[in-house]
Length: 95
Image 1 (cartoon, rainbow, N blue to C red):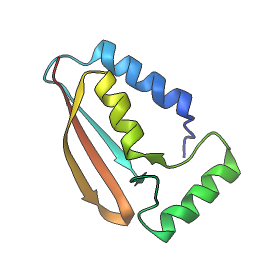
Image 2 (cartoon, rainbow, N blue to C red):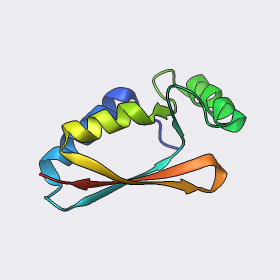
Image 3 (cartoon, rainbow, N blue to C red):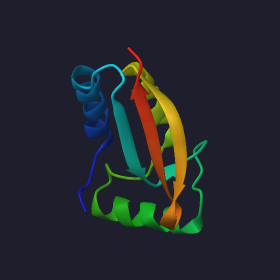
């Protein structure tokens, strides 16, 4: 498993803004918190495991991801429920 700090998440969206063309789609898969809360106990336990490996990693808040996406010119199309308490966030570049 690759550990991703918040700084790398921010850089990812900066790169997306520069490289994704209008109408392009971006999909992000994984567990997300909503309104700062875990969606299930297994995600809370997973967060502890991630933080134990690297304090800069962790489950990200959907709302923070959406802010970064909007700043990169992306709009949320769909938030899909996936197995094992994961989500698939589907964005499209509008500008």
